[in-house]
Image (tube, helix red, strand yellow):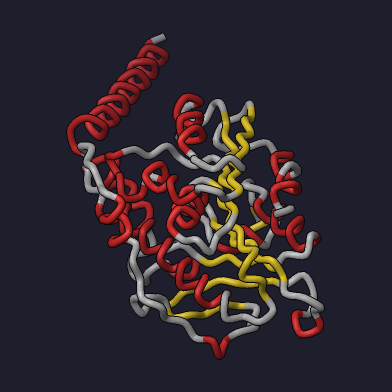
Amino acid sequence: MKHRRAYKAVAILTALVAAAAAAIWHFVWLKPYSVSTAELQARYAYREAFTPAEGHAVDIRLQSFDGALLTGRIVYPSDPTQAAQPFPVLIGMHAMGRSHMRWWQAEVNGKPTIEQTHRITQMALQQGYAVVAIDARAHGQRRALGQPHAAQRAMRDMHWFGKRQAYEQMIIDTVRDHRVLLDWLLQQAHLDATRITAAGYSMGAQGALLLAGLDERVQAVAAMVPPHLGDNVAAVAPINLVAGLQGKRVWLLTADDDDHASPKQNQALFEAIPSPDKKHLRFDSGHLLPSDYVEPLSDWLKV
């Protein structure tokens, strides 16, 4: 009996500490701030830098805007040298703590890729797309030596200490990397520059919305369970760049029991998207969508 009471007391204390930490993060340490469109454009600005000599390699190694190594992979649906016409392109963007390998493999390190993004790749290849994915900053092959947990530390510092700079910079630089990737993609004769789409899961959905909102070269976006972000991290909140989605094909896939975004917040994001060509798919699940969420995306790929 005493053990049960002690266990219950510890559980209550843990819940109170977590609630207090969340309240401090929202109301004390991370105060909202405003950011203008011009400031957003300036923060996401980049200079062109790529290595066209590596054109048709399966594994991508490019120099990014700041000299960092950009790592990833591109897969064509068939031999590009024998293609009758250029392939449309799907850019896949992975979730927090993952890598570009989530877009190719059903299992990583013996564990299933529970986001099911590899099935989106399979579907896209079957529909004639070339699929490309790279590692986000501080993820996959880009985890810094001696600092393998930089992404987790950035999240911890933001949530517990109100330090947003490292998190925001990770997201901004990842989007900039994708703009460098777009430069490279447009140099490839076997790819159709008029049919470039982006899809992402969780953090990848956040990045896909930011990329499409910033860069006119991305014509369509599918965002699976993007986290809700407000002016506490204004520079990386997709809602601040939705104006750039005007006229684009935008599908938003959300969960009604998502710890990272409420149904009301998801609906507000969807309503803010100015494009008439948009669709909102809601699932009765948590942040991990049911495995069959992939099937409806077949229609989204028909751009």
